[in-house]
Length: 157
Length: 157
DNA sequence: GTATGAAACTTTAGGCTTGAAATAAAAAAA
DNA sequence: TTTTTTTATTTCAAGCCTAAAGTTTCATAC
Image (cartoon, rainbow over all chains, first blue to last red; front, side, top):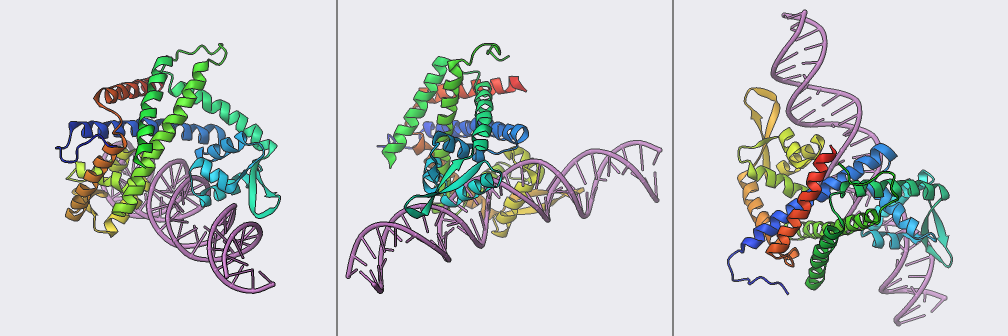
């Protein structure tokens, strides 16, 4: 489904796409770094922990470790460590699954839920500030561009 | 310079910006993960190593370790390790700086330059493929959106 | 010349990340 | 039932990343 003719000389578009990618990466990395910095400085936590807590907050009944790693698109071993650390701090816990002694559900504790509520509010405000230059129509435009990239991605598989 | 009135109720735009950010992060992470996967699978290397090699390739005379970490926006200690590993494999080397025994220049070896040339060509082709859904005008649009985010960013500091 | 402070770099501790190996339990096959 | 395979999770090794502490060298002030 690629639009490029393999026999054609390198199109100038190829260079433009590369420049765009580098620019996109730079901007998103910068925003992400800012969020990480604020999470660390103002809330003594990290983005991966925030992501795990966000996933668990959406699923109050808990998620299996494997569901969690699927959801977050990270490896199994990765979430093991993060949930370990959240558990040590009393923000998460593991509960046995009825009828399957291999599996465990990770859940937020009440303290974890309270902590996440604060984090989520701060996070939304930060993002709102970082993207404040974009108004409604521009946001639409951006969604549109992302959808194009994503749908092409699915073609490729 | 923020357009939001702190006394106003949470604007719906705030939620839209958050949704956009999550979507943006998802798409860029996916593209980045794809590039990492291909670098590993097809060229037995990593994105951080590629980034260091790209910086050194742009500066044939070499870069001080601190210039390198400034350029890549990562910590000093970080580049120490990456250059160490590139050096172990004969792709980079450190040369003393005339007149300052504290400093060292990191440079690519001829083998490193050759390896990078291959990597860079493959990388450009991958990005071209991943962003193939974007034509010239859309690329312009995207640059425009990124410029807005960036320029607002500078306001905030 | 000596002392003080700054600069360039490395080392260290701790968290994140992956892929691969290990463990344990469940499910399927024999 | 016993064996085999699959599934859920953890552990491990190795690289990436940061902030903070440590080392060496340079520059400046005295």
